[in-house]
Image (cartoon, rainbow, N blue to C red; front, side):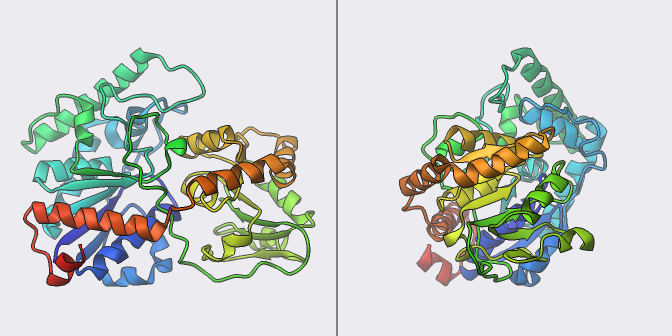
Length: 409
């Protein structure tokens, strides 16, 4: 039985937790001991099996986002706003991750948007694999490449940001007596990358055949039925902080369509606007595997839920709030399967996007065509393949596996 630590450091909301929990459940069924080292723990209430795991609060930068570049061009820009802009802060974060890993003693770290956990595992000689949608797994070139697809990026900017992060990383490594990196891309040199997206939706243009498909998990959450009545069926999952929330609430309240809405921590007055004939508000995350079979439109911020729903042939209206979501939204619009609204979008823009995705057949057709292209994709099969590869890597590394594990791997 091996000890496997899941590390989640950056990003937010339920997608990270649900995805890691799905993979962890499969590994636990093979006899492995699981720990979650997560930046947020509140979402674990929807993962009942997590009570059987060792749970730790992951180290977090206290100044996360304060000095962030409002228009990041590449992964180093993200890192500079998440603790890597200060060598002293990064040294503290690295020390925190090293302490967690050294005390729990995993045989492998599964890193979900967790660069400092990856760095800590490197210093401790612990095998590490990445598990994510591609945004935090840039191609391993120097300097790390741009992920922007809307504007040209100054190569000098990329080089300067890359060099600054590398300088701070090496100061932190020196503090712990670890050898320096020769280039920042070396931080990404892990045992294996599990690139969980489709090529058309990758955040980077890369030469790779190692795509596993999106790491969606739709089999957890509250069961809910579509409201009775006529009209199309729309699922809305956004955050209450979105800039156009009031406009969106007004459109939902006046819509003749059947709409199920989940907006975490929404106040009672606004919840009331989302309840009525053909309209349902859910106070909990939804179980989506059966629910999505009859969905006509997803309204969300983008990101992995959009990718997963596209695999079901569902087009999306998207309101991206950060660059990971923004690039996904742009990719989906390029495919003809999505419409995205910028944070400064007007009420007229939102209204146009709503009616375009619902009423223009090109969106439904493009989404169905995409789903047909990947009709063989199965989240369960994806997890089986990843688990089999993890066990192969563990056995090569000398980890002691149970007889059940070795027979099933």
